[in-house]
Image 1 (cartoon, rainbow over the protein chains, first blue to last red):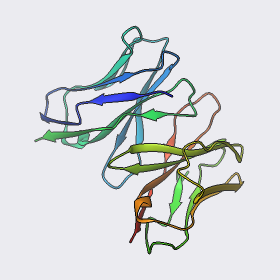
Image 2 (spheres, rainbow over the protein chains, first blue to last red):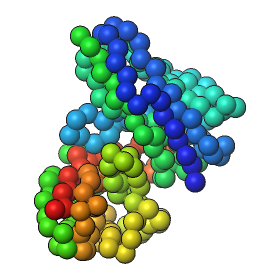
Image 3 (cartoon, rainbow over the protein chains, first blue to last red):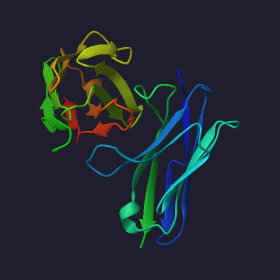
Image 4 (tube, one colour):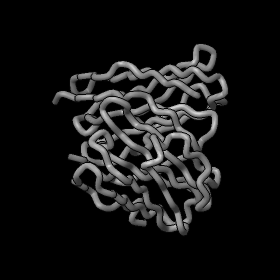
Length: 111
Length: 114
């Protein structure tokens, strides 16, 4: 099956700085790459996703890039705010109904 | 819509007892997923249903775990007998399956087996 690795496991940034989280995947058939944000005591929530026919996608302060050749994708958060503090998970799948999650990155934004 | 609803939110039980976790998916969603989250293993898919039919249960740890979806608006995950290593947060998620791949997660059930 698919194997997704995520780095770093923890990340601290100053408010206003950018944060980057990176993931690699193993299955070249994977074609859907979502990012989920999990706040304390809550379930994960989709924040952005990208499909394999697209190299980059942006939504306000959040962007995701995909390099299919190298089998890696990244989440970029610009102008970070304290409410961005959470655990972020990447995922990959060759079939949308079976997500393989990374191990998560705990992001702390320091005011 | 109220989103995915799970109950109970917290469950504390003794080893050997039966535990039943409940989930109500978002109305109109065709897919329902059960996940387990632990520090050691992260988020793991246990089983998923499509139109109430179990499609892939390869993630179910062992025969002590069973899941049912008797209708489109209700699913259960049962552990019998429970063991301390089953302690985790169990999430239910649903997905429309009609062109959208977004999975909507419930708030989770934190299970502690002593």
